[in-house]
Amino acid sequence: SLHDALPISIMIELEANAESKLIEPHEGEEFGYVLRGRVLLVRDSNKKGNLLRKGDSFYIRGDESHYLKNDTDKKAVVLWVSTPPEF
Image 1 (cartoon, rainbow, N blue to C red):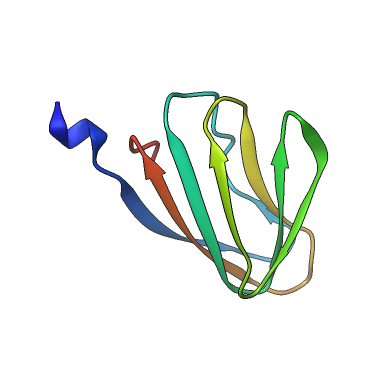
Image 2 (image 1 turned 120 degrees about the vertical axis):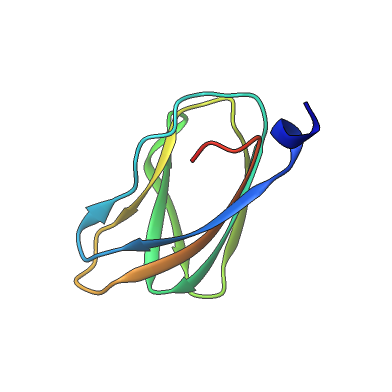
């Protein structure tokens, strides 16, 4: 349905030394923008993660497992947009 194809956006707040939920492989795409702090974008193809700081953005296809990790002692905030909705 059309509703399933519409993107959904959420604000993810990761406390110090926290991780987001693991997103399993799925059809679709995702975009993120770091509003505060620093996070690692961890994917099957890069277990060490890509470092993203405030002001950085990312775009990924949903074809591999992925999650965000905050390995700092400060809160991080990320705007996350997914299509189809995965939250």
